[in-house]
Image 1: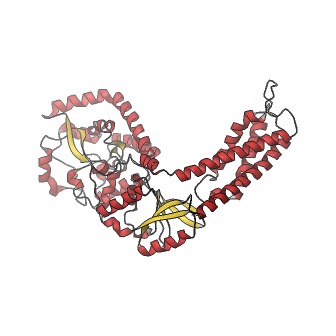
Image 2: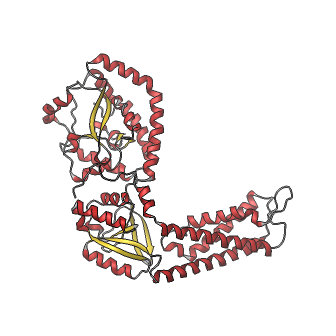
Length: 480
């Protein structure tokens, strides 16, 4: 499907704000109610246990001061809540209703408290009977509280309240199958549906997304996963609209990149593992870029001054070279580099196109490029010409690590699947650079490396690429 990469498209900075606008209030409300009720019942269990247990100066601190259980309820309850959360008992799927998991979590909480008291706080005295009574009461109270809450929610949903609004996208046959499944569950309220074919018409698809947003829907169920040619694009389109994507496996084809399988009211749903550089991840990466860029500029300022002087004396022309490149969301910007070519290099490139050594014809690379100056060749060998791009990083146009921003000449030759590079900030270095740089002679291999980075991004991966870049640069691997 041809993609429109105009400036009007929603930016990757949008997901968190859009998510807050969408609300997700029902899910958060359920979690908040559970946390409050669990806290109250656990506190009540310990207060009663402290009253009924054998009196041995319960909760006696070093120094002989005796305190009642109320003084220690907060850390006790926090330990329990942490274990309940880690066990998935505040999740949105059927795990939160698993009484076996609840029994294990509460028992583990009691064991943790026993270890803390007897091994780390020997001066804190609690009767064994108090622990036993607290454990039994915690099980009884929390089990009863959650059972009653579940019963109330089921009754309200059967009356049409507290249902999660969803939208179905897929082929007509698969949508019909999905509706039959969802109708058996009182948890979901299907507010609308759209034939997957609507995505082939960008205007109609935009209207569909706007309609979903206005209707207050917070999650989209994909019913025909095997019919989607560009699942990453679909994920980003929905994510930027503040919508979650979930796959309902009506057909036999399942996503190859899933991270979470959830059982909801007895049927399976799958969350698609998307490229993660959106929302809060975007800002974590951006914060790292700012701190690291400022630090690098301060450390290498003498080197930058020396390069400036060498370029000035080597050949006539400006010190810096600014070329229009394509960045995030297809927006054009000027990339900064130290000039390594003669001043009319762009015009001379047309005469050299026939000698392009990159397979596929999209990217342009020439080993013995006659346009490169003497100092320019040295700068390119060690990638020193790229250092001024730290300015682009500080301006928010680039990241330290990411797909390289390409000239308009290259982007104009892109096919649709290549456009995914523009869904993240371009970088000074990336997997392409540490995988041989100019030794990579196939443009499709370059895009494969870009996709591998986008789909597996983490701050740790950025660190690894930056460290490997230093090694590659000093070794002059694949540089010309």
